[in-house]
Length: 427
Image (cartoon, rainbow, N blue to C red):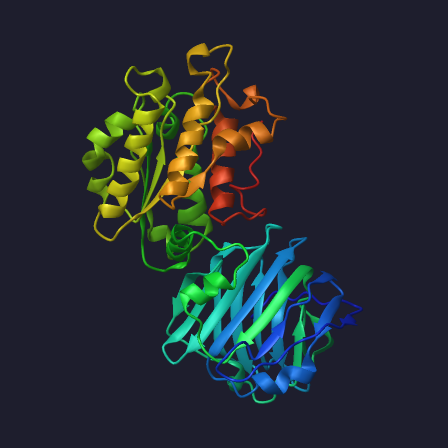
């Protein structure tokens, strides 16, 4: 099947203005009245379908927020309701962004990301199509591209246009209903630039997050280097369970399917490492592996090492981020804060929060992706250090490592509740 079917027994047509603009200027169609959809409702814009029918190139932008996880949820669809399987649809399939065009059952294009967008957060996604190919975007950033291309003009009679559902002769009541809020849906008769797509996004993504999404969605093999100290090393304290780099390996190299199993994940974390040592040994810990993405989790030992106060730590992090970017191919750096520790057992590290804050500031300064485990752990435990995630009050145990990878997976947008990694329950 092209999409996972999600039919509703009863559908309700909702109204709302959809504005038209002159070709070549603003959007040809712009529905900017937010609508809450409960899985049985939709917005009928069929009176505007004729504006889109001739388009062979252009841009679709949708801003939305999901309230549940459905196997298939339409964001916008134009279809021929009199025949089966003639439609152009931008939708979520299992949370992944999917764009498909069919004409009388023939699939002209059907592409889907591995990154997911049904996390309940506000997202702006887009598809741009011209003779050079099709590109999917999130938060203004390209996350997938292919040379295939088809657009509204590829469907003979796209008379039905709707937000929140698709319809055809086999499903006259509709299918693939959306559950959530669609804030805006707009269509242009031209391809918007990245700057324009960023401007259309209320919450633009970092360029680096888009680059990581492209790595995850690509069929080209990638090398991930995960480096740091004993926490990344996974030494001793996992009690025989997987460390967070091992969980990440399973999620990417197996669960995301082929050809991601040809990616490589290298754990070059070393017990006792500091930011200064990582700077000094950058060549053997990072450069040697020709990475595409480099994760840096460091700081737990800096706070207990003479001469590595917050200012030196800051300078070392800046050096590391810039050194990653300076490597061939300009790999993507990811900064991951250290986890909190038990102050009763480790009084010399009570100010570790200051190092986590410095890392966040460096990430903001350098426009780098930041995975904030320190505050994630506290927020999930009423502001207190969750001792059940620690082995010795400092090193994460098997539960702590799984918590780390879950935050990493969510922030890098490959969370799936049905995944064995994501749903793992450790006794």
